[in-house]
Image (cartoon, rainbow, N blue to C red; front, side, top):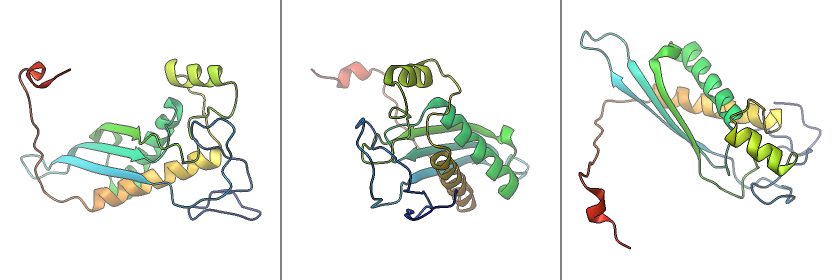
Length: 178
C-alpha cells in the first residue's frame, strides 16, 4: 500500500485521504474501528478417480461493504487467481466459479464509487453497463485484492475432506404464503 503521512488502519489503508461511508453520500470516515473483512470458502470436487490433483475449484467470497463495482470484482478475481496459481499451483482453468458478494454494510469504507463522481453516471456505468471503470481509490482496491487473495490461499491450504448437502423442493409454491 501507499506510504502514509500519518493515520493508517490495521490493514495499512491511509486515512490521510477522504473516504466515504457506503451509501451515505458525503459522510466521511474519520476513524477505523474494525478491519474490513473478506470471508471466503474454497471448495473442490477433490482428486480425480486416479488420485491426481484437485479439480473444479469453487470460491465463495463475501466482503463487509455496501457493494463492489463489476470492474473491481474482475480485478479481485484476477488477484485471487494469480495468488492461487503462484502460491498453490492451481491453474486458472481449475477455478470453475468465483462468487463475490457484499454484506451491504453502510458502515464500511464505500467501495462502489458512488461518492466519487456524478451518482447517475457512476451507478449506471459501473453497475448496469458492466463498464470496466474502476470505481474506488487504487489503495483501497489493492487492499481488498490483497486481503481476498490472502484469504483464498489460506482457505485452500486448510481444505479438508467433507460433504456438501442440499435441499430441493419440487413445488416451492406449496411453502409460500401471503
